[in-house]
Image (cartoon, rainbow, N blue to C red):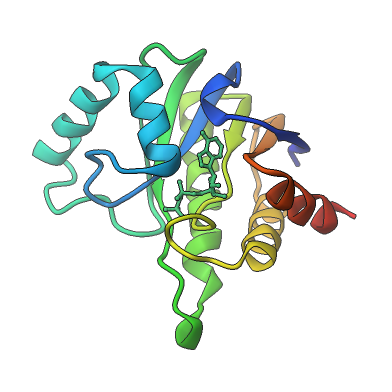
Length: 169
Ligand code: ADP
């Protein structure tokens, strides 16, 4: 099982093998984590995303799945793009959110990545309540069978950090 660490900070500044992007299914960029990764990582990431759209993912990357590209100028080797579910209070099924973590770790294993940084997927623009998002994230990572040695949750603000810390108790 991977060792879990928590840091408060910016995911684009993590020196790890792979950083996970809270992408949208277009793979063509967005706000939040996605915007920061493309801005700091440079155009090479978008180029590879466009190539993925032109080949394997003509209709976009489905929610809950993950795919890797170069990390461009980020201090990482790869970006693993995953698409979190948009929160709907009346139908909040955590399985797709859990799948984002499990699939990202599966892709990390395929790459041979040993250190992986995750943001709080779906907890921003996609509206997932922080406590639930943190619980699903920690449970999914704890339940994953993976050769990844360190999973680092990178939380942007104190509230998110505290929500993840509470789950790790
Ligand atoms: P989603 O669309 O999946 O909700 P967002 O990128 O909007 O993804 O937000 C996910 C979480 O990441 C939020 O808690 C947000 O505050 C946080 N966040 C935004 N920018 C960064 C960043 N540069 N590094 C780490 N976390 C970030």
